[in-house]
Amino acid sequence: MNKTNKLIKLAILLSFAIVLSYFESLIPLPIPFPGIRFGLANSIGLIILYMGSKKDYLLFNIFKVFIMAILRNGFGTAFLIGLSGMILSVSFTLLIYKMNKASIFGLSFVGAIFHSLGQMIMVSIIYNNIYLVNYLPILITFSIITGFLTAFIAVLVINRVPDRLLRIDS
Image (cartoon, rainbow, N blue to C red; front, side, top):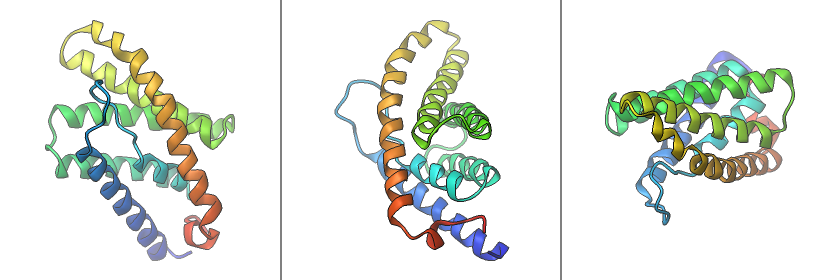
């Protein structure tokens, strides 16, 4: 695949992820816990990791965080919290992926859990309150649920969409 076609595919996937993420942020969840989201756009990240490269996955996540900051509230507290979650999530997901130690479900769990951990670390720093990490068990519980959902969607897409449409690295 030439560089132009690769760039077009990645841009389309990124655009789709941003639309998903934006609309998901508008939907109120019927649970009383702040900060809980399904993270459906992360299924696109998993597809990119499996059908593209580690570099594609990293760039996808960086662009997604920055573009969402522009669309939402700018580069304030919410951006810092999202960025810290993304950095930890992507770092550990790529580490486990490189070690070839987990399925797509395992990688999704790792990404979701470390995203929550990164966010809670940043929230604790911003508000100068280490006790906020007591909220982490609730976030991790939901991370496991959303990690499963994200991986399930990614697997469905990978298995049902023709390889030639998803393949990014060839």
